Structures are given as C-alpha cells and as structure tokens.
Length: 536
Image (cartoon, rainbow, N blue to C red):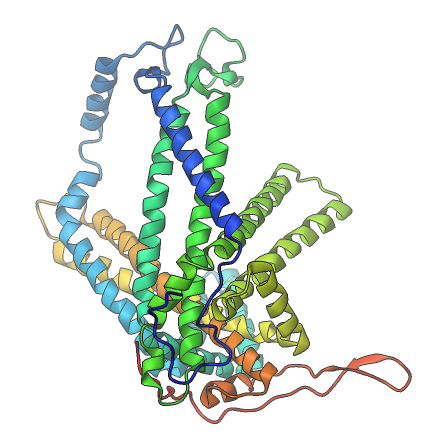
C-alpha cells in the first residue's frame, strides 16, 4: 500500500491496511516463466517449417502443395450444398438481432443482481419450483403421447425432487438470506465488477501472444506417413477406410514448448482468478469491518485491494495459483487414467477417489487462504494455516453442508434465465422472418441465434454469479473472524450466519471419551436488510 492511501478514521482491527511484500520469489518465478515462453516463441517463429501451411495431406508421394486443386474442391462443395444453411447468410440476417440480444443480456445481468438483492426469496422459490415443474411437465407430455414408462419415470423424479426440497426447507430459507447478503455486499462495492472485467481482459492480453507462439511452435516439425496406414502404399486404415496419407509430427522442441506453454496459460488464467478473489475479498472485508457511519472508510475499497494484489501480495497469489495449476493437472491426469483403464480393481478405484478428494480439499483451502490473504496480508502458507485453524477451531466446516445449496441456486437461476432469454430471442426472430422470401432457412437461423444468445447470456450471468459467490465466501470468513474475536462488525450479517447450525466444541466425557458439545444456532429475524454503509 502506498503512503498516499488514506487511513480510515477508525482503523478496522481485522483488516490490515499497511502491507509487507510476501512470497516475492514466486512472483519472480512467474515473470521468468512468462519471459522464457516469449523467448521460446520467438525461436519457434524463426525456425518454423513453411511446409506446414502448404502441405497436401492427401498426397502419398512427398505431400506437395496443390492450392488450385484444394480451391476447386472447395468450390465444388459450395455448389453442392448451395441450398443448405450458410454461416455468412446467418450473420447477414441475424447480426443485428444477435447484437441487440447480447446488449439486452447485459441489462439482464444487472437485473440478475438486483433480483437477488431485493427479491432473493422469490428468486430462490422460482428456482426450486422449476426443478419440480420441469420434470412434471415432461411427465405430462409423455403421458399424453401414450409413453407411460417415460411419464412415470419423470413423474417419479418430480415427486422425489419435491420431497428432497421439502426436507431442505431450512437450508432453502438460509440460502435466501445468504444470497441477500452477497447481493448487498456486491451492490455496496460495485467497483468489483469493473475490476473483474479488467482483470479478465488483462489475462486475455497476457495469454494471446502465448497462444500465437503455440501455433508457430507446432510448425516446427516435418511431415511423416500417417501412422494409421501401418506401412501400406494406399491411404487406408486397417478397416480399409480412406484416411489422410500424411500427418505432421512436431519435433522435440515443439513438444516441450507446447507442454510448458499450456501449463503457463493455465497458470495465467488461474492467477487472474486468484487476483479476482483477492480483490473481491479485500473490498468486501473493508466494507464489512468499516465502523458504522464511517462513509470515507468504504470509498476506494476495490482500488486499494487491487493495489495490494498487484503489489505486496502478488507473489503469494502467484504461489496460490501455481498450487491450483498443479491441482488441475493432477485431477486431469487422474481422470485420464480412469478413462484409459476401465478395468481398475477396487483398491485402485479407492486410491483414485482418495486422490480426487485430496486435490478437492487443496483447492477448497486455497480459496479460503486467498480470502484470508486479502484481509490480513499474510503470506500464502501462513494464511492457509490461519484460515484452516479458524475453521476447525469453531467447526465451521459444518457450514459447507448448508452453503453448497447457495451455489446451486445461482447456477440454476443462471441456466433458467439464459434459456428463457434464448427462447424469447430465437422465437421472436422466427416469428418475424418465417414468411421471408429472401431467407432460405429462417427456422435454422432462429435456432442458431437462440443458441448463441444462450451462450452469451449464460456467460454474463455465470460471471456475475461467480462474483456473488466470491462475495459470500469473503463475508463468511469475515463473520468467522468476528466469531473468533467475539466481536460483531455487522449485526444483520452476524444474525444471518448464526442461523447456520454448527456443532459445539469437542468436550471430554468423564470416562475419557470425546464428543461434540451442543450445537449453536441463532435464528435471524426476517429477511436481510442492507447495512447502512455507503456504496463505493
């Protein structure tokens, strides 16, 4: 933190405004890795094989280039499928509709946050009801069409879903209040959204040259006979099916560079995600621990947190994102091993499951360690030990059995709103163009438009939903710190989280056995009301 940053009028005891650089070696390692990737990319450009572009993979001789033949084949295919759906015509007819729908999807994203902020109960009930209504509607359709078996299956699924949700009534009510907490926290720190967008753009700019270098690296190699030919003179496989005569084999440099660059790209994206979590958590912590009525304490919270992320804590974030990178690679390797070895015995399957659980726990703790780093400015490992001890000391890991429902609500709401907007966009386009003499395939265009609108809307809402969940994680850790220090920074938020049933402390019985003490539970009164703290 720079010396020019303002100090809050009443210093928050838990949020550290002045930071000491941590884990600087890992920041240096990340910088060296990125520079090495750039140097290797320049080498790949200078030593690429031009034959990669002009290669004719259908020629069994020496694979000479035949641009004229390829162009003639393309023209013949275009003439053959002249009446089929055309991407160029799709863009011509639906371009304005897609742009308008995407623009309105941004407004839908704003409404998405506002709905959870002011009508969290209605959003939660609608999401839950849809999970019962959709299979019930499918059951009715199948029964009306005389497909009794399918109708009974979907009907049973609807009844089972309704029964499960009836058992989760308390969790549903709690999820409603938690979503209100998250939405109000985001509304009070709206700069988080702008910062997140800029961070994603920065990550994309950092990855784009690496992606280009990857393309040039693949060009370092030579053409070889297709291994599927197995030495045959004809370009056929073992079953006699026609295949490409040649294939491209990257050299050892290309293979090594590709592997390293892919890992670095994953590291960059996960680093951007960790910076987002850090900035979100830091801004929310400043808002949460701000003294009542201290309006100046909540101004510039996002910018201050971003300075901490890119300054004193950048090395810690590089380390945390590297841990997540290793975790992702290991999980992918485990999944690949399961796919390649379908005949695993029971012991092997148990070992794979244990490994998957281990890496899931690592990712879970890394997320909360990043939240703690944003609040205290500790190094990554110290923050990890701190937050793990905090959770275990109060048995707040029991909170995970309840809070998992909140992400489910957001994900389902995201899917349903995206699907509804896609249906509206695609249906409106079809109704407006179904009688057009200029458009050959209005139905297909409407379907493709609906799919594109769904993807755009789903991306926007998932982006905002991820921020809401990050806000909730930060508020949860802030509440845990309050509980640990026996303070109440936000009474409304404190009351809501105290509605979460958690087991009591471990106590020793007279006979020496260990047992849990009585659980704590405090019901918050009514729906969540926004704390009286000014927005950023």
